[in-house]
Amino acid sequence: MTRSYYLFIVSSVDHPIYRAVHKKKKRVLQKYNVPYTVLLNTAIYDLVIDEDETLFPMDGMNPSMTLKFLHAVRLFFRMYRTWDEVPDYMIRTNATTYIYFPGLVQLLKTLPRNRVLAGLQHDQGFVNGMIMIFSKDVLRNVLRDPRVFSEHILKQPDDVALSKLCEPYCRFYDLSHYFMSEDHRDAEGMYLLNEPQDKKWFFRIRHESSHREPDLKNWDHLLWVYDRLPSSSTTSSLSTPKPLPRSPSYPILLVLFVLLFLYVIGVILFLLLRPSYLYH
Image 1 (cartoon, helix red, strand yellow):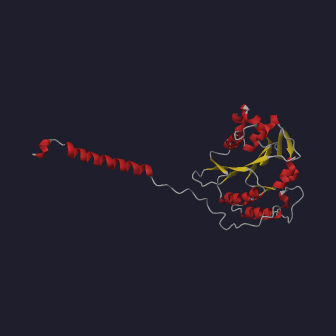
Image 2 (image 1 turned 60 degrees about the vertical axis):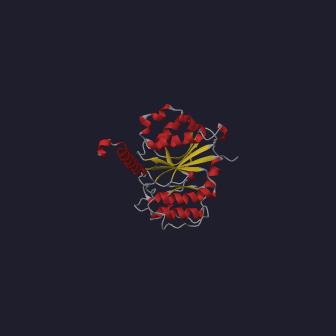
Image 3 (image 1 turned 90 degrees about the vertical axis):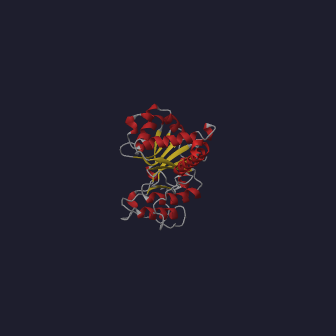
């Protein structure tokens, strides 16, 4: 039986690479009709955003990203009239994670509907933020948990904090065998494959370089190999996000107009009401 899900993509926009990746990622999201929203964490307050994006002012990743994600989930729950209408799973992922969605659908069919936290477990015990799959009951319990406001938890990175908050309400399901190992990349960071790999449905696409052009090449490569989406141009994809045009200073103009109007009225009243002796 098909399991429903909703995708939350956590991203920054402090480098033009992210906006370029968003464009590529949206192509595959649209192909498979994936329901999603993008949670942007940025200091660019007048950034032009798309209707599928939610802008959060940057005030540090810890603890704000944990609270921002949970706030987004709370608002999402409120969109539904009944609990049964809420999708079975909430999936938190990074902008730098490639997901093969037909594979994800197959994977979800193997998971229980309740008490689920699935992902790639870090050697320190938390679930890596590349992809975290929560059954909806787990996040509902977390939202009711007073530890959400615990400084001890919230000072941790958001994937660590979420892992700790979910721990009493879930069972962990390891998805490490669905991740493509980074050992399969060449010196430039490109994944070495010409066809889809069996049950390798998640890829981390983040090259440790300042320009990170290999990231865009990797996206194009995987979108073709797995999703048969042709390469899109990257010539203008790394341009700086365009800010909203500055509007004229209407409040200042209004004040000047009012002052001018009052001055004219004052002159007229003076001429009409001045003492009669001034005429002689």
